[in-house]
Length: 175
Ligand SMILES: [Fe+2]
Ligand SMILES: [Fe+2]
Image (cartoon, rainbow, N blue to C red; front, side, top):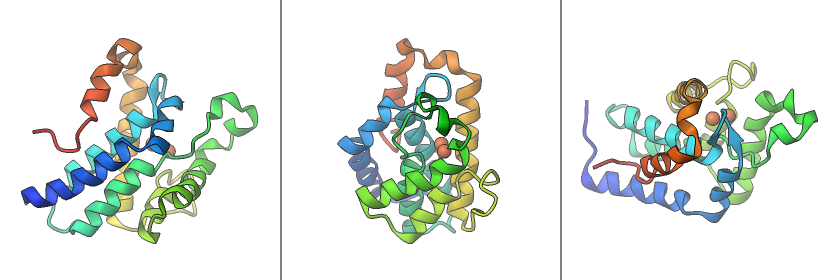
């Protein structure tokens, strides 16, 4: 077990807030997913959970944590509503990690490490894109975990709860 220093937390929080308030990222609020949750809320929930898990473990360097955070925020940055496009429905599961990755390269100039985490987040559906690093494995697992919870508790995502979830994702570290 380890505890991040104040400075380390501040550094990660700054990255988180930068994305949270980015106008391009905010477009994910319009993308519905998992019965009522938005892509925006979903992505920041996954990011928070990943960092919470990894921050306690010494084997995650600060660079690993930064990659993890960035990739988790951008893992579903595909920016289209697959429900509105009949032809995309079937392909969405396999296709969207690659779309999210190329959008993220275009808009945020992300590293190779971050790209690999995004591309493998849907494994085993994307059979050839196996999560190789511990960061990629964690995003893959936590995305599944949050998506399942959202699907099971979809009533909680009705509009009146929206504020609560926006509050929940408003900071990386709850203090
Ligand atoms: Fe996804
Ligand atoms: Fe996701």
